[in-house]
Length: 232
Image 1 (cartoon, one colour):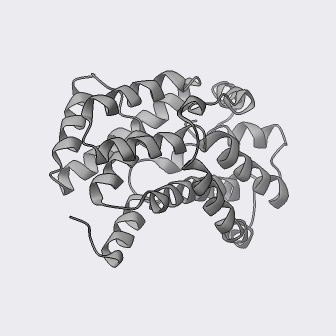
Image 2: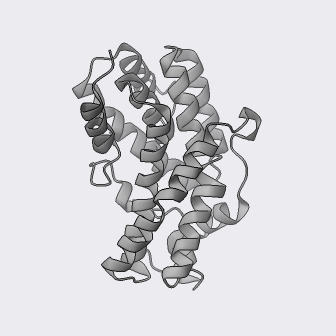
Image 3: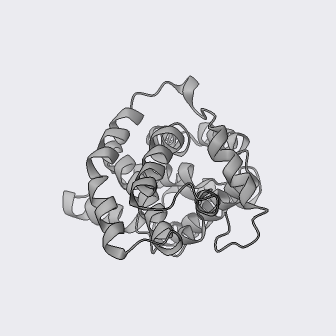
């Protein structure tokens, strides 16, 4: 049963809140490497980094996995969700990114299995506990938001906004940027996020997991940085 628009908005605000205690703030996804290499160093380069991450990395990877998990959850297809989750695991080359996604997904599940009795979600969680499936964040996010009755375009927009907030917040701390700079970057990303969300709807399944070697390499290099603030 679908919730009214006001309640659904609150559901999406809750699940995409950057302060949700799942640890999203502790992952930079290669940003810390870019900063130490002096490639991300000011408002312009930070904006470029966030846009490129959303357009060329998230859209073909986590974004499209959110989309497909959402549709599979609507069909109540557990086996297909498990297969999709394992595909996501296989496509995450950098160890830190792979492990970070697992931690986020598992922690998100632990929150929502206490809040809702959706059978599909509880069966998926049981499969995670039995190590039959990894439990990646994008798949869990797509599954839960579908079960909550959200609209797919709103789900993708909230997912991308959450990713953008985390990237900008980390940039404010590390570049460093002023708080007002960070808010200006985020505000000006609104229409861009809307465009990326709509583009995600039409990506062919064969494009799922499109390789982005530059981002993957920076994430791998992060493991060996001299000093680190973030887990990935």
